[in-house]
Every structure is written in structure tokens, then in C-alpha cells.
Length: 249
Image (cartoon, rainbow, N blue to C red; front, side, top):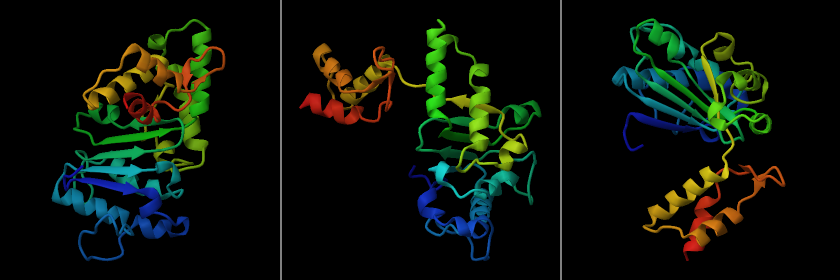
């Protein structure tokens, strides 16, 4: 993260006003590279940095809060161009994060790979339809399907429809209608085993190992769903840090 080729943008900080989408999209000056604190020209910022180095990582946090239409300003950098204005964007990485409960990773690699080109990587980490994904996972479990036997097709339509129709950065986005997103990969709900592993990692960070009694206290403080079966953590591993610190005192 300390590298000058890694750029982190907070949507609520850098793009707070939905009325200024057009201003955020394009360049208004020729004053050179701008910092993340002055994000009134998103395309110019990306263009300037990739001109200086073809391998950049652009991270957009809280993508679900991005003003509708702004994400489409990235479409030229994602499209099937060998170069755009004599600049090759295919070695840059775009990472999109969301804090809302259950959207999806999407990435653009397969078609570029088939074309024999070294692709840019576009990762969309947001969890469209978290409750729906959890419910679908539960239905598959009740039908006797193991988690390791789940197929991509079990969730694809559920997530792609949610990404396009839900309010947020991807709402009716041209990135979807132009088929620039090839895969929609769900974040499945975490089970007790996953929560235990999170707790073990937090303890090891402090040079400690949790006893069976300590682990039971940690797991006992986590709420699981559905009631009576307690299969999936309602909040993933979000509260595990505090729970582990508490039992290690």
C-alpha cells in the first residue's frame, strides 16, 4: 500500500456528490497528475498514472455508494483495446470493494486471455444479494449438497441480476450491458469452521494459541443462522478480533 503505484480511493470521500458525476469523470485541466485528495478528474488521473507506469493498482472502496454512472467512465480502460491514445492499460489492476452485505467478485481475464493478450485485471469485490446467497446456500445444504460440490451455475444468475438491478455503483452499468464482466463469483456465508480459523489466526498474531475452552467462548459469542441449526455466522469474522482479545486477557 505504500507504493506510489498503488492508489486507494474512498467513494464517499472522493466522489461524495451525485450531482457532480460529469465533473468526476473527465479532465478539466492540463495541470499534470493530481493526488487522491483532488479527484475531480478520474479518467485523467488514471491516464496520467498509467502513462508513467503500465503496472498500477487502483483500489475503489465502498463501490456500492458510488454515484450511478460514474463507474462507466472506466469502460474505455476495460474495453478490448490494445492501446488507447497510445497508452496500454492491459497491465493495470482495478480493484472494487464494497461494505454492503453480500455482492460479488467479478473479473475480466478470460476473453483477453483467449485473444492472446496480457490482460488488465478488474476485480469487483462487492456482495450483491448477500441474504439471497445465504438462503441459496442453505437450500443447497438442505438438499444434501456439500459446500465443496456447489457449482458456479448455482449462483451466477442470482448475482448477475442483483449487480445490474440493485442500487449502487453497478446499477444499470454499461460494464454489464457491454458484457465486459465475465464471471460473478459469490462470497458464501462463513460456517463455524471458518470462524474458528479466523480466531486461530488472531491468536497467532499475538503469539498465543487458543485452548479448547477459549475457542468455545469465542464461538459462543458469535451469532449463527438459522436458529436451531446454527450453520452460518451472521457477521462473518468481523467481530472475532475483539472476541479473541477478550478471551486472551
